[in-house]
Image (tube, rainbow over all chains, first blue to last red; front, side, top):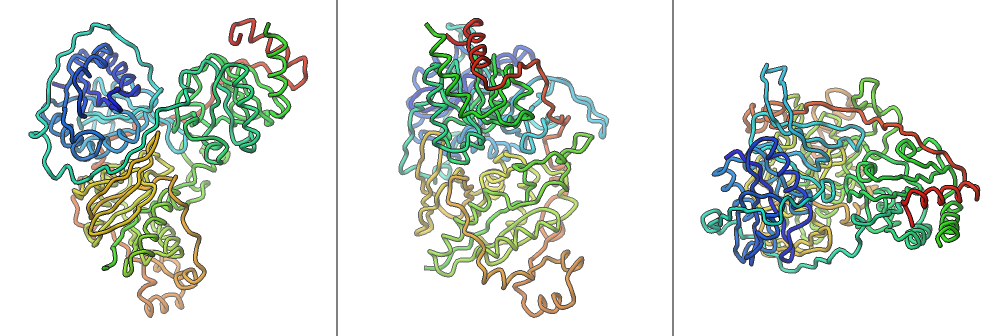
Length: 339
Length: 291
């Protein structure tokens, strides 16, 4: 009872990275709260799935295995979690801020009348004083996220309702194996008991999911472009630089919205989070929504016409000038110096 | 075929995409007055899907429902200029301080006053980016939900066929009516205002607006033409529990708000000369950042 729960997403028999990242975070918090970490997997053909989960430190793995549960649809997954959570009374529940987690999380929070904070960028345990009602709370989950277009960072708490729920985007937390042989207790969920036939009214009649081809998350060097790159054609320069450096191309939301670059390359609060050893920001002004996704880069080079661009304040090297001039020179001097 | 009754949920939001220097007050709070209020972008995508269904299903009606201060009637007028038949404004101090759960409770209570086959809204609003209100309304009304919709392909025999845009692909689902659908920004843009509708509805106003700033001619005109009266509801016009509204109905509390301040770190400033770029590359090789 009162444990930390993580809903594990599954695609083609593989647990999503974001779920493993949340298990890692959940393990740390469970240690701090002196409680257990429990994982929930809902899908079909799940035999052996626990082998992917246990190493991340799950003490209990709940499995709901039924052919009607994959691909994901909202209602049966929600019913299972509602019933399981009513039975187990978790204090904290996490899911990925994915098209599944952001569909399921709010429905679940409404069913359980509990608070949910979307797209958290940090989760820590702390105390809270409700001055108005003169109540003090210990060991609440601080759900920290940028809000209002990234102009503020808000710390949200759920003092009275349980579970305290949060979604987190892929790549925001780190995943880390606790012990390859970590032993977890497997508990199977009676699907018929936890769902009813009305939960299966939506049918998925067609589905095309591509494996991600672009791997900016794992790239050691990221060359990212913003709106200031100016056009899709100019983005080619970034690809050229990324190629000689052995990196990947990323983009800010403004560049993606302008059609310069595909959505999969978007970095920031509403895209992926990267931690490369070198981040080259080209024509990126550096709004907090973007920097939230790259501020852990070891070295940042900012190339911008505007010497007052916010990105310059977090950059190790600030090059003020035209990226159309600077990037070819970078390529040129890289080639000259690499022997 | 009998037409569809469609309710589009729309929100008036501060334009957080165009935040200027005066957007934050000295005390770190948001200066809403400095931000233009706009029709939430994804709610416009939702409106377009509703209007397309109306185009293809004779006899259909599209009505907007919004919650906000009296100026939020602007989004209802905007929707009418683009082809909606009318709208409802839910406005009361009792809703102030609502988190997503209290918001969806109030909106779901208002929706119970209406007849609908579908409730369509944008996936999320740009002032919060939570994407929670749509699914929470669906839960409160005990309806199935389809989120991340890119296209409502068709509605036949009480079943909607909907294409959803996911991170790495798409899926097509069939969902029985009534249902709640949230629409993605990847869906087609909303059609522009229609000059004929602008002429027809430019004097449309809600109760509070009429009391505050309608001229006598406008009042007479609205009297004559009932379609110019935007329905306005307060907390007494919907069946709801007071403790579920506003701050008291919100499980989440804001513990603290921090204005975002970038931490300045020592940065090396460079120009674009050959020597400076060469030096930089040499630096990066020397500390094994590249190589």
